[in-house]
Length: 144
Image (cartoon, rainbow, N blue to C red; front, side, top):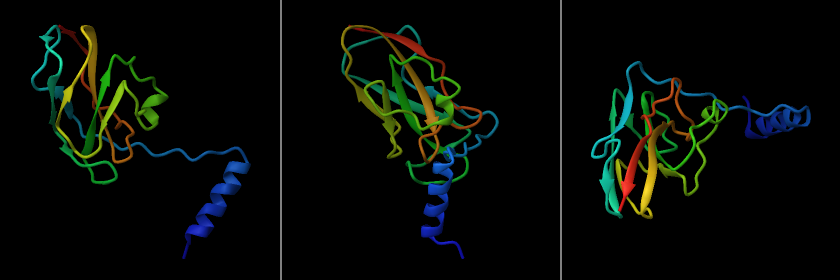
């Protein structure tokens, strides 16, 4: 029977040899979609404003809960598109990448006046985008 000490020892051997473990990406079902329920490209809003997350073809589960065909929302605000390499890693957590690991499906957002981009990306139990990724098209909104 494998113990945690054995696993940690093997990881140390791999790390010393220059290998780093890569998390496996979780598959998404065909046709799964994430979208904004109450916003569309070109909308003008007053800050703070409500953002509602829609999801079809999958369910919502909190971060840390590994269950097939589920994930949790991430809201990208004024962030560049995730690169192919970033799609294989946990989504960053910062001012431009908001995590909703509790399974939330809406949030209030406060942004300064001006033009902003928003995009939704579904992450798996470990915050890594699914394969294929379940993400909305970016939308542009005007905050006044």
